[in-house]
Image (cartoon, rainbow, N blue to C red; front, side, top):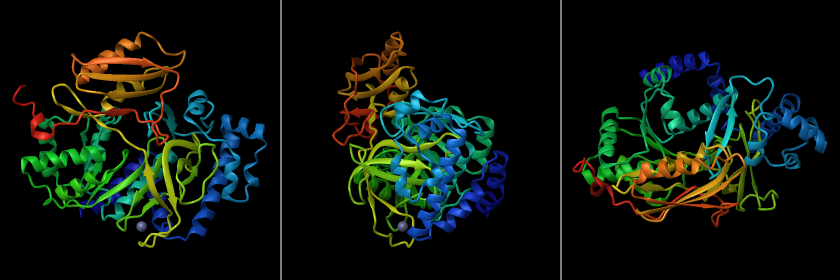
Length: 459
Ligand SMILES: [Zn+2]
């Protein structure tokens, strides 16, 4: 009953107040998910022409680019013509941040992300884009029998989100029954608190990093606390590679299936798993290309870098945006009958946990935030070699203030322990992983599980 009120009255009202079109977009998506490939591609082409025309008329960066290469949006005959445009890289976004804003943009909000790769990035998101990304997530939760307004626990690590818990947002979260648990610190004491909150709320859905949810699950097991009697319908995981052992741990402890997702603040809500197992692309909004190291588009079934064009980004276009992630497209249909195409595999996405000297396990993002926001940082990678030694590989440009080296040292010691030796290695390019992707946190320290890392006896 409450869910129906939230989904049909409170949420639509909230979105209208924020000038979002989420409700209408969601209605369209519920229908379009059943369309066949041909019809979905026709929709993509129509929306692509509209996006590129908007970019040509209103976005200085693209007006200049199209003029220079002689590209005319209305001359596009098929989706293949998209390959005539150059890629949008993080370097391009960084050096053309202002020129990428549309002169008719509405409600631009600034975001800063380590993204799905190790290079920090500042970019903007308009209202249209927010509406579409929220609608795509809403649709995906309904595949699993969860609607807006159903109680949800979010285990997340972004201090931006945590810091932005203003009163309006708190009220919204309360009305829509979303509760945020900060995934930064995972001490046994904190984990006990999380387990208590999950038991008290009895959420329909869990949402978070697979590593964080698996960690909470393992802790509940070790404490002998049952979590499979709460009526949780699904655990949505995203932002990291999902390992089999994590999936089985989460499924066993919470007694619910795990739905894997792929996307990010920068690239949007790209794909999510349905109950039949298919990883469906949000094809109405996002065109995915897979490219080889030379930038050539690869056929379905071949592995390469994931490049996305987000069709709802007229305010700050993401056109042929290089994610740095590696994946494979599938041309087989999903047994669920939805026409939305499938992403077969995503490789090379990962963030590790790191372990402080006192045994506290925390999400790698806790260290990422120490470095990510410093001006002039181009690339970085943090390698926790042991409890006593952490290395930082750092590539900077001329904007970098050398005084910030001290901030990096003290920031990392603050989180990992004051005795930790931090070695900073300066370089022109931080080397990629074998997969071709940047990992920004790698830890070689194995967390001693759960109860052994209990700090309550000493604090
Ligand atoms: Zn499916």
